[in-house]
Image (cartoon, rainbow, N blue to C red; front, side, top):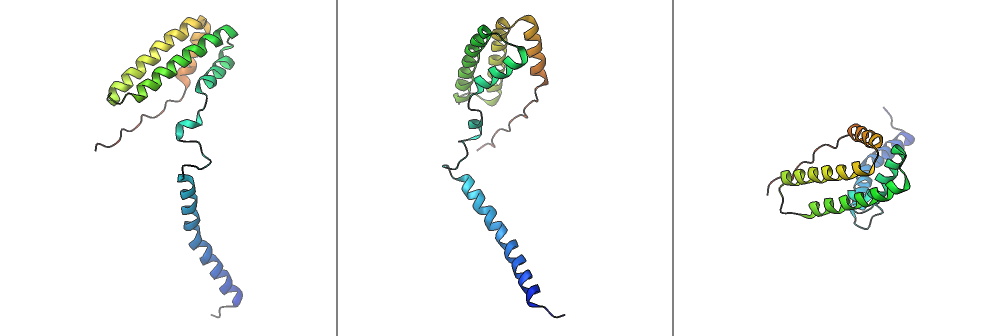
Length: 143
């Protein structure tokens, strides 16, 4: 079998492309790992305004009044502060942290119930139940 110049050129081009692909992928990963990359810092930076987002969603779903929006904004900000404090408390075990988080959610559900009408609260509860549940986080391996 005789190899022509065009066949040889095609084979060399194909070999070159396949050998350069891993290098290109490695370069992309290195760029993504740089701290000054275009991505926001950390996975939580994607949610810049969680209070505003929650309020907009509830307004749309439950047809909130301006008075209810103001009260709920305060409730959500208080909840966010308590949750942030819980996250920063390193003295708790994961189980204690989960229990306290559940207590915070229950406490603020009661405050939300005080702001919403009976119909709005029932609809809000149904919407909460329909939300997809996040898979539980794996705890880091023991050191």
